[in-house]
Length: 287
Image (cartoon, rainbow, N blue to C red; front, side):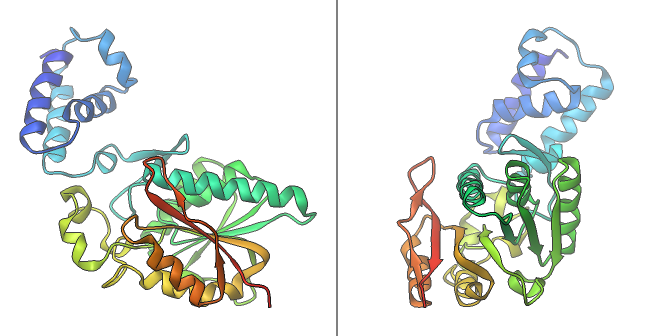
């Protein structure tokens, strides 16, 4: 069977299974098996697959048909031009989180230019390490820390950091409880769990059946982690520092109000590339 025939038949199969962008998904799987750039497939449509290659592609396509995320199948995901290993211990990094990373490293760079001491930052609930690694790569003079309650997630984050030569101090534990009490940071950044518990069952099968529930579930109203960060974060933030969090685009003002009630000054909520409210930036109120 040729590359083109595999693409056509597998695309039809995934479309019947309700997979979005089925041809693109097949091309990624095929490129993964053949170890070639996806666009090179178009120059090799008439190339015949070996029986072993065909068996491998069929097995991966069946997994995708069961709605397993593509990134878990191929074992990696792109984030801010970095290739990161992912597995079911961690969320698949999303494009909207890239904007949070860019906003965060821009602040660290500006802060570093204005202060003689290198800035310190912490990523709460680091998962794959995507945010922390993006900060370490783009602001190498910064002291980057990362926490996670999942030992499996931290193990993967450490592997990703080593792959990208990112100097990060990892801490196993739940949010700020993982840090030494005297810790102080110029930047606190996080993409916390924020999906209301009941809404998880309405998400795509890739998410609700395969991604780690503890990294999604923000409690009954999705705001549990914002309440904790708002209440505890002030003790870990330097004067003049910033807190940057990803938000649920459904009702972002509720999270912002939690911080206002805890004496934070909340800047205007920033939108992602789809013009959805996505990033909360806050600083401590003086005094």
